[in-house]
Length: 284
Image (cartoon, rainbow, N blue to C red; front, side, top):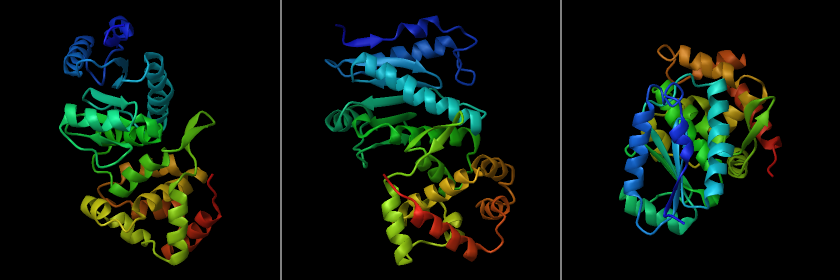
């Protein structure tokens, strides 16, 4: 068996459908050749072109192909259906490392970085999603959201960017559309809600990147996720995204748009309603 199994389907992609927002077949082929040259010696990787990504994995070939179809394509098709009109302009790589050892070793070797999360992350610098796929596909779907958001809504406030990504960490399909389910973030949020330690929505939505990521009291991701979940369960999430993007200049934090879409003038009253909703949820 060769060290690399290169999926021949790329050679059959017609030029009009090979594109990644204008990327042609030749660019894809050249990109794959460059990837092959970068792969560590003595390892077996499979490369699958799954627009707008190129998936590279060191699990068995059939497994990598299945993940490309059942996770990457599933998420991309449904995210584009509901939210994103444009693909990322760059060819992006999805590295699926089979276990923690492979993830840590290859991240250091290929990207000269030490992972700060056991699950995976999106690197705009390397134009790559770098995953420990042994932890499951949830983080992969989460990270798929970010390059699409960057291409379609670069000024997205961090709470919604991470809220939407986190929502689809545990997801499936409902009525032909992607749907987030309750997940592991719920227990910590419920504990914080019960203790009164969750910031107001005014504070959450006003956070810039530094405040959201570096001054997180431990609830920014979960609060954002379950605010998106609340909108989803009321059939308002796609509408909110559409209005958020349309009103970005006038309402950069999304707070006024949130109130409008929810029909809630009194945010303190809405917070009590949302907290009661969160406390009734269960997982698993």
